[in-house]
Length: 170
Length: 91
Image (cartoon, rainbow over all chains, first blue to last red):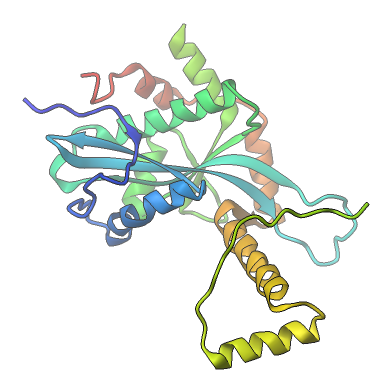
């Protein structure tokens, strides 16, 4: 009986061309994921099932910045919030509906928690970009809050993640 | 104090005569040699590409909403429930 492997960072040798989650842009991203990882722009974690790439997610450190408002100059430094962005999460069609998506999301949150708790990463926010309405519903099922202004982008306070993980550990 | 910049790495670029002449002209107009000109211009472009990938720019209204959200831990009962469940690789 094949088993899902633990998520690990993507490697050059990984076979990625057969992956099909039903979203061409998410399939194609795998071809450049290594380059992005080398350039330290993002980190992609992969899970295998039966020696085949079953799912992945991509995390990136970002800053959420406020656009400049004309007429409101001189308010000091431009504001920015440091955040972790879950830029992509995708599951191969052959293993959809088995809970891998939830497992990957939880893994991404736990990894973010580990990064913040073990080092100087003043992250205050977790941001998710949903690719479509179904993806958005998926994140809302875990209490992510959609932005009223950009409906395909969802947020969760880092404090929420921290409190939930620490409660779970006790 | 003048800053000493160590340039130990080499980058060579293939170009055609027309492109090179254009770069030479622009470099001259900027009082730089071609090397300095090309490096400066491409670093600025690189910075803006990286910046576009590592920044989300939101309106002041959205920013204020996010800032408010971020100050407190929300109850998130469904997230807590999901954390209790086994992951598919542990099952």
